[in-house]
Amino acid sequence: MKLLGIGSRISHSDYGKGVVINISSDHYWVSFLDSGIETIDMGSDFEVIEAIRDEVDSISFSEVETILTDILRKWSDVTTLVPLSDKWKGGSIVLQPGDPNLTPKEIGINAFFHKIVMVRDRLRVMEQKINSSDRLDDQEKVDLQQYITRIYGSLTTFNILFKNKSDQFVGERSSKA
Image (cartoon, rainbow, N blue to C red):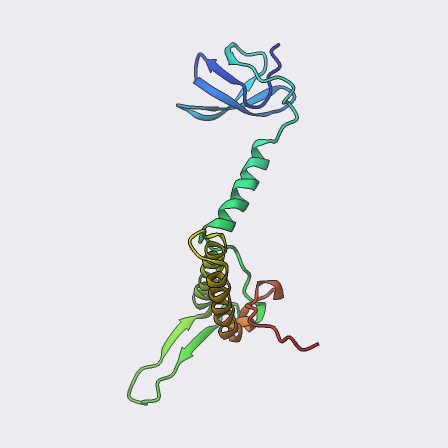
């Protein structure tokens, strides 16, 4: 039986060329170019193109998936799952015009909350892009960061919608001790 480490390259008669991405006691999980991820028996017939040894305890596919998901959340504008406070679930917001001849507009609070969370997440992405920019000098970064902090402060009104305090907007904190 061939004992290969993660990263080993093989050629399988049914699946073609692939790379070992995870290992269990009896199987290799292989990402094949043509057929995607397949599980094959360690003792099955395949050709070893490049063997990686002593790497069996490397990172697993699920760990790679978790790491990639964390990176994507950090650096993209993908909205994270943020829970709405229980007391607002199923509720609505009614915008009542000052003119009694006009029709009020009702918005589901879940849809409204989703928009608020998207604004928050996009502000966070903008913050990260500003801080990692090599085109802005330090003073410009500080100025833009202070502006974003003031935007967060303007949005603290909506904190009552968030179930978890850690998800809420935080504006400028008082420097009083």
